[in-house]
Image 1: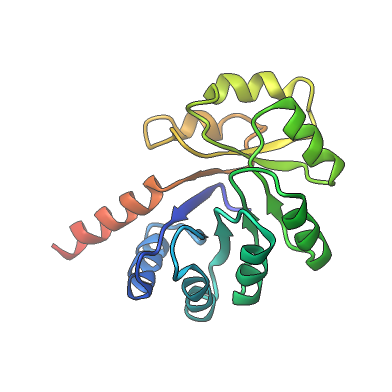
Image 2 (image 1 turned 30 degrees about the vertical axis):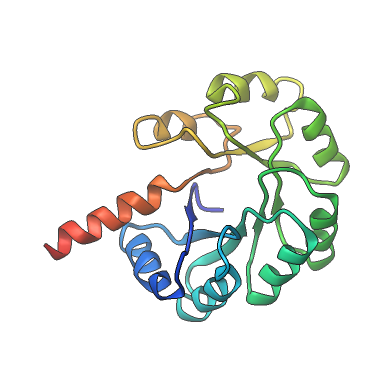
Length: 186
């Protein structure tokens, strides 16, 4: 897994290529395309077909229907803001990584019961950030975290330095990549 996972919101299918090209130029080869918009499945299908060297996943997947749509479109991993047993079972059945949002010990224990050892920690800034991750790592040494929310260029390296952080997610990767692409074209 790449250490940087951009959270990509595609409002119109036509912007998919521009965003993914900017991410690739900035050295990022992973994208979590969120199910916050009506064209999410189409964007995932387009991304998988046109950016075969990128690992394309689906984010903000909150139910079985969205999970099936994402996987049918070609998503190679699934991310949720919370833990869905249905989504976990679909992913396990298809051999697809599932990263559910877990911020409490109870949620982490539920994930472990489902065989999940890497979880999204969202929103990280609201739930105590790196300090909370370090505290949760004590009773759950087998768990790796993907913190998202409240992370940006100013604290990215601090998160990545913690060995229990598998990766960091955020929309700021997209903003930074697009800004760099615009500056290059100016």
